[in-house]
Image 1 (cartoon, each protein chain N blue to C red):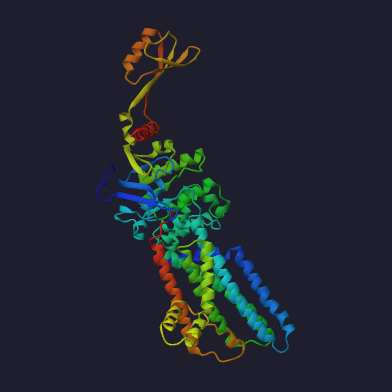
Image 2: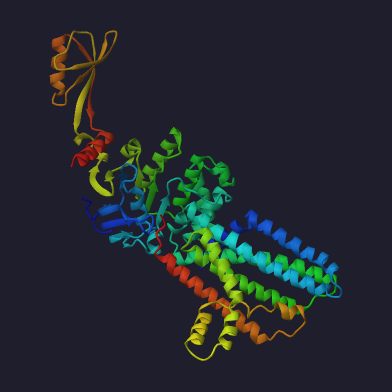
Length: 312
Length: 254
């Protein structure tokens, strides 16, 4: 289902299966089954799925935090268990917990030290990144005094300290307010513009829709679909037409959704086209104000794919 | 090595911020000071009692710090998943284990030094200080380095309660291991004797390096015994750390 991403794909899963056993007397539960997926260089790939679908397992396998029972995971061309594979990789975990006595600046500098940056470089990067994520004013405050959103921002600065080529974000928007979400989205998009590859797991589909070039949908540990998003807006299925019209009588083939004075909101089925809608409005003596095709959103796609799997 | 030191530094800072550590340190210092009161109960043995109680305080409270702070620091990392954030960077598992050990060992060393200074200060005031005490305290420190390694070793694969329990048991076994040599000498030649000898080789003997009694009673401490016990206990610590690194190498961090 996932292609191999060509040579130089930052992350490749080949036939990866992971089972967990909570207690030794219990039967192991399959968390991920036969995953084949490659993250292409320079893209933003969204990892979507309901809770328990295997998103975090996938990320942990990628980072060598857990080990596959079958198959192979390669990160930056090396086995994922090799620490050298993670030198140019940044990671922001879900609900990150950092030593709360550290300040934001110390946190980022410590990460820089683990990544082997010299002291002067660490200081420079920490100042630069805390500014970038909007934490310059709180750089010397202890993390325990940060709000959840600020911890998330500090985590992002930490993830970027080694100027990564590949960034893995696990539910990065959780805890952020609407302004924070928007800034975060802009930041992720700016990373892509600089050629950084991004893998991010989320169950907030609106975020994924705005950010991702592709989405991979997981369900119960299986990869059930990989879809291109980004530039392919025009290729998405039309689910219907929403038409605002003024005046006139009943319109053939349309369902009236609401009415306020002269203004009406009508809904036409997907097999109509713009010309047919205009003809129907003319015939009813109504004046068109707006005609908008309702295309399949990521949420529709997500529910359709999961529904199909459910039926199967 | 840079990463080991970085993790060690962070662990040290975290350990010395641990409230239990201060509580134990205060208790130890109170106990050392209290030894002065105990001298009122005896005649002519004042300095010996202060030495004995003081070094026992260093030993016991050092052990408790290793148990509570050592096991606790690693458990907290697992529980709060900070370990995942660290190991998602270019950090090898062995670097993490050795970094944790280095930081804990440094924190425990600092505490042992503070307790020793309190004891030496009291003895200097009474004019009863002897350089042999430095050797005895050094051997206690070596033992604490071993105990810290044991705490890290058990924490690498076990829950904190069991880790603390196993570490404490190893300390007790280590101090009773000498009785196996006694048993061996009293058994007739044969399988039983060989089994006892084999068991003795499999457990660390911490009593051999304990030269407190010699120091307290002003008896000579053979340098060879100090050197051999140091090498022996540190080799045991290295062995436990090596096994901890191996155990942690393929552990799933869920």
